[in-house]
Image (tube, rainbow, N blue to C red):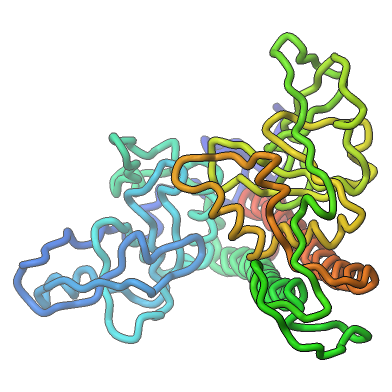
Length: 427
């Protein structure tokens, strides 16, 4: 393959001519931490281990201590700017790393579950951290790790010898690190905003779906009454699902009915994060009763699954699902109040009833059980619609943030491919 002018082919791929392919150990000091010695000599000192090092961040929720002599502590003590990598982890997480920036309030060391990279003069620790994070996520560390029965080991010597491409000037390394750090900051800010929005949504659901908070125009303050679903307003009702709609169990089909195209059978895998997903589809060529062909407004529910956590997950179907059916491990619930009821399926009220029904061993919800579940329901349809609209607006805000976050992550991934290979030069 022809190499563009100004670039060269190396053992790690095509890089700029002035970049160097060097072993990690020549760019900084590589060292494993201290072996755990609960009854050793010396003073009790704090140390970090794999539980403290996550992708791009240090977590100090669970910092342990062990005795260390002054000589040991001097050898394993952390400095600001040290890059810490998980030496022993699952294969996909081995090498997960972050920069230590004196987060702990007192001098701290590392245990031998971690490897420390201390950049030499002229090498940017920020660049090294971004380069190592890319190695972990792109499988470079997986390829050099030694797999034991349950843990993969990065290996100090293997990491020391690992050949990687490095810009020769620290200024360019710093520029790359800063650009990628800015992308990380955007991702983190979106993640935090999304977390806050989800917390607000959970609080709003709890209050609006039980009548603890009334929307403008419905603030009648009638008082509360105790029901089987808890305290609800006097002008609300506790209604069983069977009283306000019907549930239908899905299609039973044989392996010989499956085709490469035909009628799509919605299954548990087609519901992801409360929405329909079409990454894993099954099609059948057979007669399907009209009543189990899905309709706009159907609430698709997982009612049987090997995983208890998936029982009750659901999605509200729109026009994109027309012409589809659903499998026998699924159900649809049909009701005129589908928007309001769909939100109730996300509520603590229904989730608690589902959990109580499953008991110790049963991983399914029958039609009889589904119809027996009760929800708080405003008597006025207008209030049902207003609550559904308010919660749907919050869903929309969260979906927009999720889309922004997905784009920000894709942008960061694209930047990694360009700036860590020198295809785009920042200085």
